[in-house]
Image 1 (cartoon, rainbow, N blue to C red):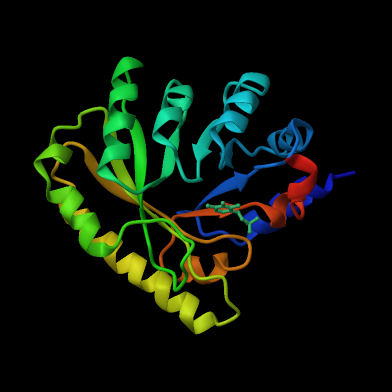
Image 2 (image 1 turned 120 degrees about the vertical axis):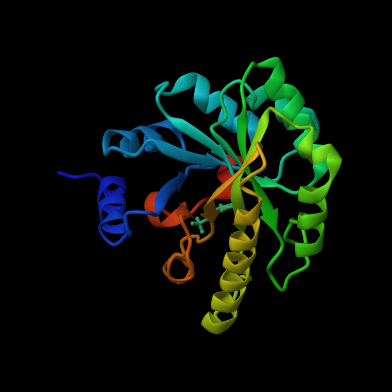
Length: 228
Ligand SMILES: *Cc1c(COP(=O)(O)O)cnc(C)c1O
């Protein structure tokens, strides 16, 4: 019999266009649940805490691709620098500079997404469009050789209003296309648009998402109390 997690993955993937990659968001979930998804063929997992991701990296199969999807503290970048496959939520030149430094120490180039603030909420992190282009146009950015800007990430407002969500994702897609005009820079290869979560991913895909981050629809609801 197929596990619930395997069934959920199969159902989600059946409707995904070929260009859309699925990140299974496993934050707060035990290794056994991740292994169930792994057995079902999933290889890309997303976590939002560096310590938790590092523990899971040590314990789980080495061919898993680990994505950091949460807000990153600069002093913790060094713990994930040896293995992280993609950092989704880079929102400052200072953070990018620290990632570059730790990547160089590990003799690698770390792929990053710049997080854009698109929601109508106080609590979400991210750059404004102006700040994004200020960063990309700066000389300090051009001097970073151990990061690669692979695209953008954003979160829509948590709302029932589908039109608003669609508008926010469309805005992000429009900015994504503008960033592609920077692809001549050696540290830019804008090809990934990370947008869409359990409650809004079909809209995100309609609006041009190439990477969705799905947690609860795969693994079930999270219980933060039990995992604190
Ligand atoms: C938790 C989280 C997700 C997944 O959320 P679900 O609603 O469970 O799909 C996606 N992106 C980020 C940045 C998250 O923190």
